[in-house]
Every structure is written in C-alpha cells, then in structure tokens.
Image (cartoon, rainbow over all chains, first blue to last red; front, side, top):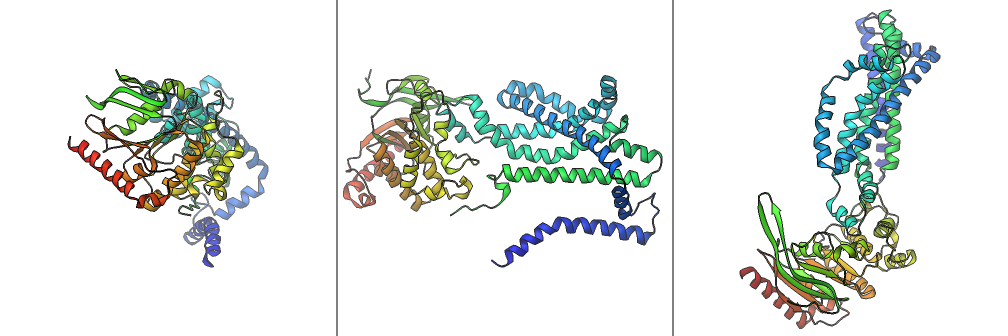
Length: 262
Length: 264
C-alpha cells in the first residue's frame, strides 16, 4: 500500500502544523490590528523573552513541576486506595460518595487559605491544592475500572479459588489501567492548575508566583512567558504519559493495530 | 433415597435451587439427580432458563444448592474448588487481553499457588498448543486472534490445568457454524488424550450427540431432568460419524425428548 507511509508521516506532522498555524495566526492578527503588547503581545516576542531568561523560567518551572508532581501522585495513590475500598464494599461506596461529591462541589481555591493556615509557607498548601484538583477524576475512573471487570473472567478465576487479592492484582488492576491513563491525561493539567492556584495565594517562587508578580508590575512578557512555559510543561508531561501509555497498554484496543480475523 | 453410583465423579442428589429476582423467588432447579461417571462426557441440553448453567455452577462450587447435595470425587464442590479440581470454560473465551496466548494458557496454574499445581508442565503445555495449531500464536495477544482461535486458547487453558473435571458452559455458542463444527472434534481430540470428566452445557443437539456419552435433557419451569439418553456411537469419533444412521437416530431421540420436555 503505497499511500500508507505518506499518511503516517502526515499524522506525525499534524500536531506541529496545528501549533504553527495557531501561532502564525496570532502573530498576523497582532500585526494587522496593530495591538499594544499590554493587550496582546506578539508570540515571537514572548518566546524570545523566555529563551533569553532560561534561569528564571527553569528555576520557577521546576518548583511548580515538583508541587504538581507530588500532588498528582498523592492524588493517584489516594484515589486508588479509596476506589479499591469502594469497589469491594457497597457500604464503603455509599458512605464515601457524599464526601466525594462534597469535595467535587467545593471550589478548591477557597481551601487554599485554610491550607496556608495549617502549613504556612511550605510547599504543602500547593501540593494539597494540586492533589485536590486531580483527585476526583482519578477516583471516578479508578472505580469504574476496578468495578467493570468481565463477569466470566471473574468466575473463571473463582473456579480455581483465586483470592480477592489475586483477583485484584491479576484482573482488577490491569483492567483499570486504561481508565487510569485516561484520568492521568486530564489530571496532569489539573495538577498544574492546582499548583499555580496555590502559588497565586502566597508563594515566593513558582510560575504562578511569577505570573502574579508580573501582573502586578505590568511585566507583560513575563506574564505571558509564564503562561507559555506552563503550557509547554503541561504538553510535555501529557506526551510523556501518552508514550508510557502506548507501551503499557499495548494490549488495549485504544492503541490501534487491531488484527482480528487472522 | 437414591444412592450415588460408586464411580461417580460428579453426583447431584435431589438438588433444588431458587433465585431471588426483585421481589419474587424463581425456582431454577427442582430435585435434580444425576451421576456423571469418571471420564464420562455428559451434555446438558434444554431450553433457555431451564437451569443448565446453574447445574454447572453448582457442580463447580460457584453456587450452593438450597436443597439436596452435590459431590465431586467424594468432596464438596467448595473443597474441590480449593484444590483446583476444575477446568472451567465459559461461554466467551474470557482471555486476559494483556496476557499473550502462552501466558493465558498458564493462567489457571499461576493462580492459587498455595495449592499444589496438578497442571501440565510447560513442555506438555507447549506440546498441546502445537498439537492444536497454536504454536504460531504463542506470543500473540488475544485481540490479534480470531474468535475461533480465542476459544481454542480458552479450551487449551482448561486442559492445561490438568483438572479431573471440566465444566463447559456453551463454549462454542458465539462461533460460526464451520468453526463450531471444527471445534467439536478439537475438543474430542484433547479429551481423548486427557480423559477428564466433562459436564458440557449446550443448545445444539448435533453438538451434544457428537461429543457425549450421555445427553441429559432438561425441561423448564422449574428446571428438571426429563430424560437421560445414551449415545452409543463408537469412539474415537470423527466428522464421518455425522453421516451414520445411528447418529441420526440419537439426534431424533434427543429432539423428541426436548419436544416432550417442552410440552410436558
């Protein structure tokens, strides 16, 4: 099939083409409308500014990444722990669900001042905020994944007296991986948002703090530079997660290459 | 009180079972008695909802009888299950999609390792897989296989455990007719080598007749055994058996028994 390599190459190039079109469109719009930098800067100016200040952005970026990283993983393990209990006991599920709905309905940002009262200027208020942002999608998806196992496979394992623990490790956990990866893609962004929201309230470092300071001093390039770097970090981590997912979920229909009917 | 046959591998003694569906009780099985002898192949056939699969799950210790008893090789089904005495073949292949063919076949041996594994050695498993044409697919994932190949793996998995009792719940029902006919003889081939006792649930009269030593015909509402028919066709059986007069005679007998159970 001669067209196949061309199609594959086109699919590889597509994301870069989309991004380039977006930035070129932006650049043209600013030039044509003759907008002031305070209203909307040229993206090329922002990129040049970021490239000229690598130390500033890497130092602050690293702080935000660390907060988001810990928030993401604490949310993941806490959600898996709670979802495991919920999947095994209807009582626990019924008792936990109102608390999850309560947490989901409460704007997490209003909790940040409380975390500041508890933990002061340590990284913990930011980590906890990042964790709370990411927690609910993880719990919801983990619960679906752990619950929706195939009843015949479950029966098959029971027929050889597999323990609950074996059914958990050999069936429930692998079965929930596609759901956890799907949640992970959403939660990477949410954990970053959580870390930045935490930094907005009270922080001396991090990209959220850099954006807040830039806004108060009208440092337009730094404000947009922080946004660009945050977006770049988000995209980089989602791409990393997709690469891991492709490797781990080689067996799953979502990874394409279905060859049924051999 | 009926006494179970001395050489019975699986024995149902006046077994009754009810299920609760919403606010009412459904009488699934009523005083069912059946002895399945060692190394015997018995099919359970009957209309939908007559309790065939319930009998299979009672034999496998996955359900408890409400009245009567089930004995498997002089043990309770729960004890036999603990000792991994069952090879279970469900209606769908139920392969773990993240395991290769090779690792799916060894799944039941890998689970519940506290129990001494009565299963085949790895070499024997590979020989069996070669015998049934699965060698080219050893490292394939289930989604890379056709439905027929997946069911082949499912059957190999049950035999690989080396269990003395095989419980098969309409394993070929999702396959096309040509593959289905092919699978019957594959199953007979494997069973001829291992010689386990088989309890086989099916809706297909030809399948029941080709495979079985005896066919237990069930009636419904409540589920009960209306007739047990001997299939005295010579073994080993090959596709030609379906052209014989004896085969057609048994086929007609089972069909008549089903019709009788349905109307009576």
